[in-house]
Amino acid sequence: MEKSVFKISQMDCPSEEQMIRMKLDGINEIKQLEFEIPQRKLTIFHIGNTTEIERILAELKLGSKLISNTQSQVVIDAETDTGKQRKILWAVLIINFVFFVLEMLFGLISKSMGLVADSLDMLADSLVYALSLLAVGQTLIRKKKVAKLSGYFQMSLALFGLLEVIRRFVGSDGIPIFQNMIIISFLALLANSVSLYLIQKAKSKEAHMQASAIFTSNDIIINLGVILAGGLVYYFESKIPDLVIGSVVFIIVFRGATRILRLAK
Image 1 (cartoon, one colour):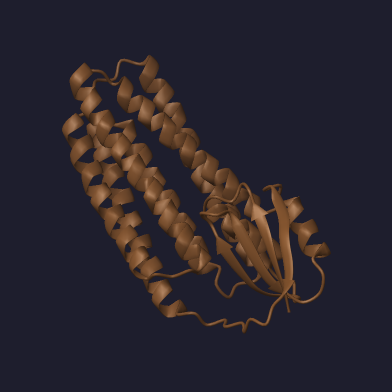
Image 2 (tube, one colour; image 1 turned 45 degrees about the horizontal axis):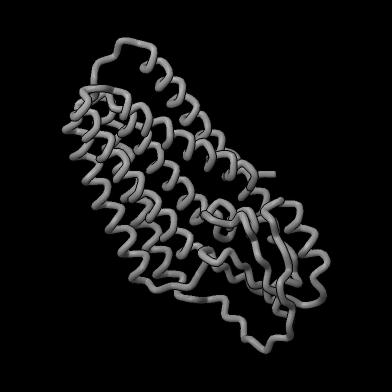
């Protein structure tokens, strides 16, 4: 058994992890993948040389580089508490989807693009978690179809959101209801904190769990951004802070969609 460690310089979220997993899917020589998202490292346990693996990783254009290759006597254990992990991911998916609906509803009522954008970010997270869960046990073709559908849907919502931001910027829409922005975003912050607690409580070293923790931590930062925007709307009596934070989050959602679409190639 060979143990090859790669540095993947552009691997920083679940989308890249999924891209790599799907790209390497079906290679019989590969026995196990271990991701270290914070360190941007991928360890592959495999039989034979790394030539084909290096070629495939290079096609993804994520800055992959082989940094070590050694013999390994590791025993591969395919069953690593997957039942518990699936339950946690389902819980996080449900939390994200519920707050997508809640934030979208109050975003439209409050005329806040910050809340609408944050709701779509919650939906984007739900799609990533759902993609991971639905892809289990499916064929590569099936995985690509799910990824393509999710990516195009997410991209369409992000583009619609950006167009709406432009319309409101040049239009005469009133100032958003800052109280709703702050209260709903604070509740979303609590929800994401619970999600992060559940993920960290699992103490899993599995890649998708580590990636989910990073994803949820980023969501908390976005929630704080919307809360700050709500305060600035009140202080300056202007809709501009809301439109700015909305634009930023829509761009983040669009960027995530392009990554998911790369899974389908």
